[in-house]
Image 1 (spheres, helix red, strand yellow):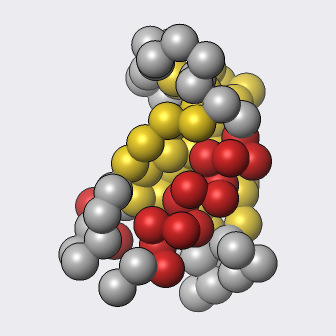
Image 2: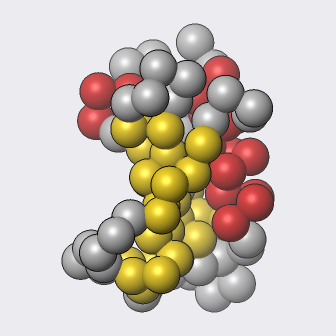
Length: 83
């Protein structure tokens, strides 16, 4: 997980709470996904993580919900490692 960084987006995006919206940056400096606190989510799991479209190949799951931002980051990293 150490090769992934979170970068808070400067402006809110549709479906997210502006201050809790992050791009996930890979080791090469490119955006490879997103983690944000969703406005609509299953109870107790407000954080949504998702791989960027070009990162989906041979990976499952490609998105999910988590109770905390840290748990979302861990789930993102786990999905990203699967090949």
